Image (cartoon, rainbow, N blue to C red):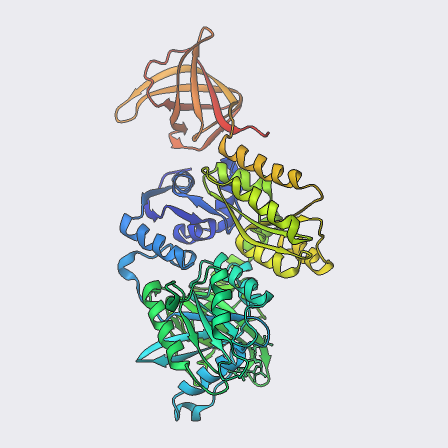
Length: 594
Ligand SMILES: Nc1nc2c(ncn2[C@@H]2O[C@H](COP(=O)(O)OP(=O)(O)OP(=O)(O)O)[C@@H](O)[C@H]2O)c(=O)[nH]1
């Protein structure tokens, strides 16, 4: 492949999809290139800088590392889950944006009532006659600052979106009814918010009720390590009543305070990208899709690409139903123009034109055909192991379900004892009862493995586990469970590598070339030579040198591989003493399966 010199900047980690965007190429080409280098990666998988640089280098790009400042910004944003969207942005372009808030909590504790009260209280009368549309999200103003609320409450929606790759929440409001206290779904909601790395504010609702017992709830919260700030902890617990409209301002203030810490940012100048919140067919309007812009600014007439759907935006409305012509970061809008109904949680991007959109869809379909597992990004113990070896994973996320508390506790204690090494074990949820769909969605969204002890998955969970490609392992013996995890972790810590010879060549002629050093004009006898391989120089059965391949050329052009039967030129780092008749053995280092 001829070298052209397009310079690109790559951050420390980048997904295949993002790399494709940076390089202006189809992801499928990058996946193929990765495969040629022995790396199996799907479109959503992250690869590190070195891997990306090798692949991009071989595809004719000059690569530089993104500046540290930008990397830090990305690192910082990663905490709030925005890395995916912001990987390509440099810090200077990032401007503050409104925080995006989701309500979580147990059924009937008042999520919808609170969302309604906040929505009504802050719609400017006069704007579209104060009529609000339910488009899946709305915005409200507090002290001159905008806050975006996602209108589909509940951790099921929250995590289903995460499982689709969307991280559309900066702050979670955990709604707990002051009379009922912490209930099973309250705990689940906390697990989900924590797994997403989203800060939690507690709305202690229904304080108007005679049966309200705020102190008891605070105790329960403390037991879950959500210690209220008035008890010297870090969790803001705001007493509210949706019915009596009490404490709503305090809640909004708490959101603004938390937003200051989170400091959500985006680049308003970029082409828009974000998440689909909902989509439906509306009479007279056709397919209306509510999207949340997470980065960039969306304009009327932009071409949207969402999964396998695309289209130019014909009309755009804000949550009050008013027509708008553009939408910046954190703004939810309903748009028409897509040629199909996308799924909530899917990511959208703006692309240059419809032709390109169609091409990208075709490529994505082809990619799905080539690597059928690409949709699922979940983990099996074996895959986790492989990712860890690649340096991509350092934490093994687990969800543990057991039949009774008496077995759950020793399992959790033993698992926690495994911690302390390089690999961290994170138990996202430990609970009794069968494995449910909620467990599967949490696992899917968090790349976790589900371990069941004396419990099975219910049929719905089993079905979604198959769809989401989540691994469920069930056990009847505790030590077997612990042993499996331990073995995986130990393997992770001490991977064994082996050199595998991929080809042999014979040196025929030696050239000294200015600027390039010494090139061995060679003939590939068996196997193949690869640009990213290492080489051993052997003379009379004696090993003289071993080092990485410096350059690989066929007919003056840089190539990434040479097959048996061809002549080619090669340089080897650190070696200038080739002689005709030397044998060059090409090898790669591979992990040995245990
Ligand atoms: N007394 C009192 N009742 C409330 C308050 N907030 C909500 N409720 C009542 O609690 C019930 C449940 O409220 P919702 O807002 O539907 O609760 P939710 O959490 O959204 O429930 P799901 O959508 O079913 O998960 C309703 O009957 C509300 O009227 C409150 O502050 N005080």
